[in-house]
Length: 400
Image (cartoon, rainbow, N blue to C red; front, side, top):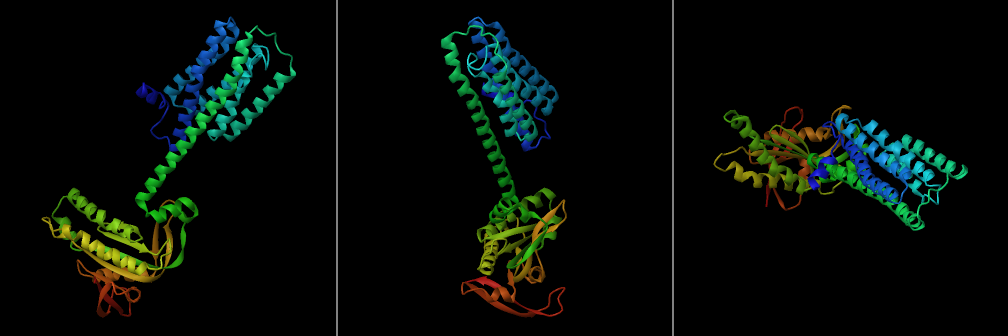
């Protein structure tokens, strides 16, 4: 039964439907499947008490609803399916109420018509909801103004019993749709958060979801620490192995390096081949970004050492770290962009990584000045790096 219902609720779903379209189709199917059995029961009751004209109206709705379901199954055309549901929603309850002799003899059955504008609004069809709401108001006014048809003699006990049934079941269906809609939206949001979290750090993902404007091109100046880690002798390693083996190796190394960066509050912004770049101190300000970046660098080397020293004798990271001002934000185009840090601080970090030996960390003078006695520094003196005219002081980093 559960498998059958699951298949039933996927009627009309197309492979290229986005989450919003899938949710709309699902909710409209739920509404149709919830109302259809109730209409069968209502019609059966009217038939049993000897009012076949009233019984024919909900049964006619059932026939139309099932026909639209079959058509929807074949065409996957959501618009026609919605029209085939909303029009009977809004019209048939009033026809049934008029057939039964008016509002009181009909036990307020016209309240079921309110499902049409409410469901349309819930599905995001604001214009259709407005039109259906106006139609509901007009039909209700007509029911009040025009003289009622002669009542067919519905038993008093049944007339009284139908009042709470109609006034209860219609809101229950609305509540069910609202509950499913909220759950669907939350589920979609959870999926988005999970996907965003795979590409960004937790802090950056939270900022982007809370403030989508942060995804726009541009950025702002911030004092940060940049870490570059590259696998030494990677080309030699890759030359002798199949691409699948190389990818497996990279995933092992990055599976250690990226969590270490996250652990110390960094944001990985590039995974370029065999290298990773990370920003510390942005987008969420962090006063101790230099020491955090250095701690991450040492953790990366320590935790990947078993891979480098194992039977396969994998490569080792060599890492450069530098602190200073950079423009932190998004660079690229309207179609594709990347969160990064731009400026001389970033360029120097990359060059310091170039002079670091495999298994070593070289840091810049600003980073060194911000560290405490947990770290051991060895001065490398003034070094010349590619792209810079003046030499810069560099330090080899070790943990105490």
